[in-house]
Length: 406
Image 1 (cartoon, helix red, strand yellow):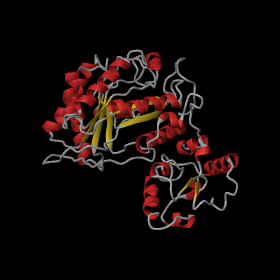
Image 2 (cartoon, rainbow, N blue to C red):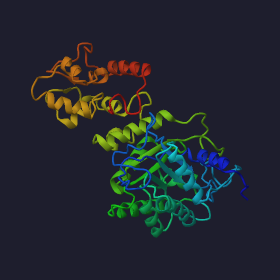
Image 3 (cartoon, rainbow, N blue to C red):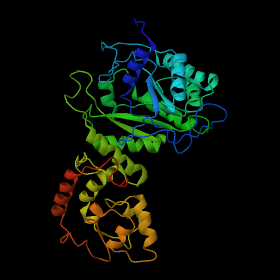
Image 4 (cartoon, rainbow, N blue to C red):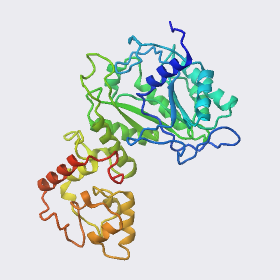
């Protein structure tokens, strides 16, 4: 039985319950503002990101934290003795508009516990978004979490109202999903993803595409398994983004790992590797393999790749191709393009690289200029370079994507 409580308390409970879902981002929407409230565009300017990539300008809230599912890792699982509540569709719509008018937010990320059934839940989401779009003429960004197993005709309706849909696969493998989320069905999740991808032929349907989330560290799945599934999701379902959420120990269960802190550094490395796959042309089996299944926590994935493929380096900066440049630690897309254009008119040396903005802190170990190593390196020896790099990384930990989205 849900107790009667004031609206402020409900908001506090349901925004707190929503904070564990990382899969929200307004990038890529192009809904026109017209004469209504709010606006988004393809560059995603209506939101801000924290340093670890999370969106901070959306109202992120659950419709309800009541749930019929008993996922071991979830604070809202049915077996937890927590305070439960629910907001009516018109209440969420009113809250969103009031927050928007006060300039607190620029859009909405709406999720929900599964109440009664997936179809019952998605109908409440549809009703909420219909009020926002039709009654308030709200044209701002809306990201809706799609209940796994919902009927396709209802997904159709939700996708025409929302800019982005997400269905979280939660676990990297079906076996761990069955173990830790026994009420969820992996086949239904992938079936819904496939359907959303096919419906994307209609430009009005979820115009900013779909995303998903995996929880990292709740199971024994290694980084190689995680990156393989992510690579497959991008290729097969054309996802805009896979989000990685470090497991937060909010429940006690003998099927869950006993940890004191979330594996945030591991989450960081997975985001970096994901970037390499999406924008740098790397394959998951180049970054990792069954014999080397996890990233180094003190080295970013591209540096880790270079050290594991030491025989491919150093590369000559004056004649290697663009794709090879992108595989040099410390050289990002911007620097690679500058190198390609500059060397058309001048032979590059290390001073020239510095002048055009190439960061050499790591790159200098993996390149030559006119056949010469950087003067400080001396002998090109793997162990010596590893020790120098580890020393540097210990002093200055990299940000989410390194110094230049490397």
